[in-house]
Image 1: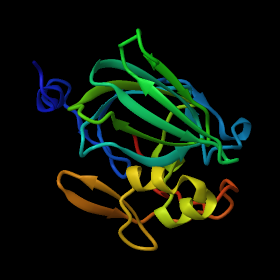
Image 2: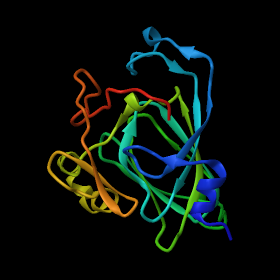
Image 3: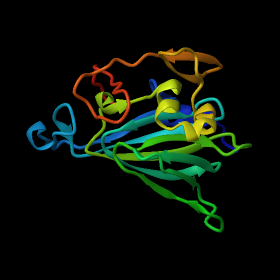
Image 4: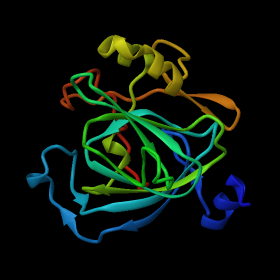
Length: 207
């Protein structure tokens, strides 16, 4: 049976900065949506992008949101749990996998600006997914909230945040990566989205 390292080597996956997991961009549309018709973003965006995305018990998707719709596709491996939280605090749990006889779905949509986190179901070893984003993804569109910020916004979901976020300090968002706590401090960008403290990367790069 293939291991996570086999998949990483096969697809030449790299660590996904700030979020966690491993990825490789496999598609970026040549066409662009101009900023003047896409006010929700900080600049022009490709029509769409797509990546491979691998998670393991220690490399998972920490809580974050992006300002584009995302579609996750399950390819192989163990079942995944995704948690989504809307701006109103409404929580949705989804199981992603290929065991269609249960409550598992092979494809899940995350609307723009919805907070999300994704982990393996307990006992799983790895899962390979795909993620299609439209308009196309840039790291400038990524926002990760600290444990303290999210707890302030949604105190009723404290147990969820403790599962998907490893608090390290009052000003940081930490994810468990390759056996070590890695602390990522998010730059603030004025004039961004209104829910919570707007933490965005100023540097835009291909995912």
